[in-house]
Image 1 (cartoon, rainbow, N blue to C red):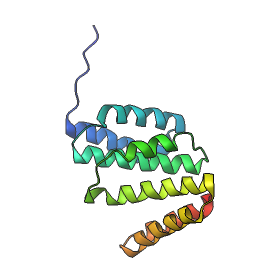
Image 2 (image 1 turned 60 degrees about the horizontal axis):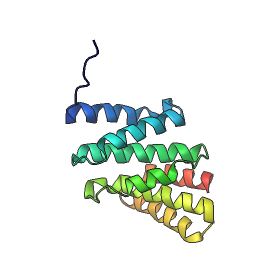
Image 3 (image 1 turned 120 degrees about the horizontal axis):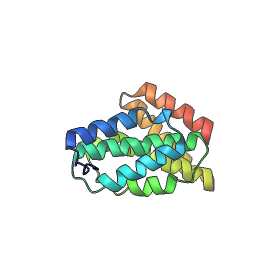
Length: 146
């Protein structure tokens, strides 16, 4: 007899989402999209800040992987989903990356200098706020994918 699905506690849901987030590069893009959509459908309306934070991290990772593979099929969906999250100080890093990927995508499609300038501003902001190594890595990504 099939057991009914048990609702996962906030701790275990967060743990499972974190594990997925940390190992996304081992999955192909389509699998990542499927798992991300399922997670968003299940937890999008959660008020749990930790769950919201890991969902933003997952979307940032998927945006990175999509652009890295020059696949923009899901970028609009991810950006519009992420923009529905509340603005909270603890989400600043993830929301900065979201706007970086949003403007990089805009630049990819429309070639407007202002989008590129916004990306560079975000990179500089990361460098200025103590994340110099990450800023340099993001700058290299920008230069490779603009």
